[in-house]
Amino acid sequence: MKGICTASPGWIVVEMKRECEFEEMEIGGWKGNSTIWYCENGSGATILTSQDKTKWNQVGNIPSGYGSKIAKVKVKKSFAKFIKFQYTSYLGIGYLDIKKIGALV
Image (cartoon, rainbow, N blue to C red; front, side, top):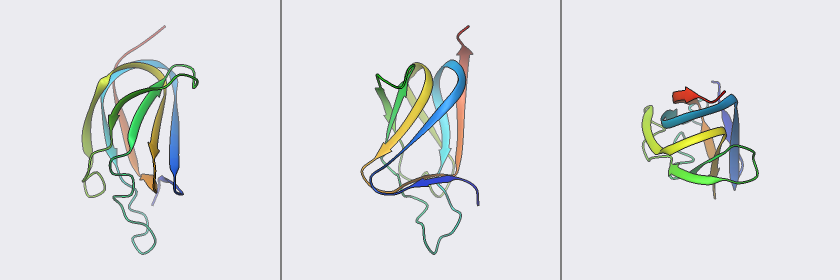
């Protein structure tokens, strides 16, 4: 039942403790209440990264099927403190795991 959802259009910004290098993540759709929310909402959303929340770089997209099972997503190698998921319609995330390569000091 835990997760985060947005209205349409929507975006979700995740702030990490420090800048990290990564090129893979696992993501799953929010499945909290199927009578009011479709777990695939957000399929195709743009994934962007930033070091300062001013300049954003597109690194990938949320794949279809992420609502029914956890999806592994390969993204362009990034050094970032912020990850933004942006979509033109409803968007929901119930699970997110960033596969960190390293942390910048």
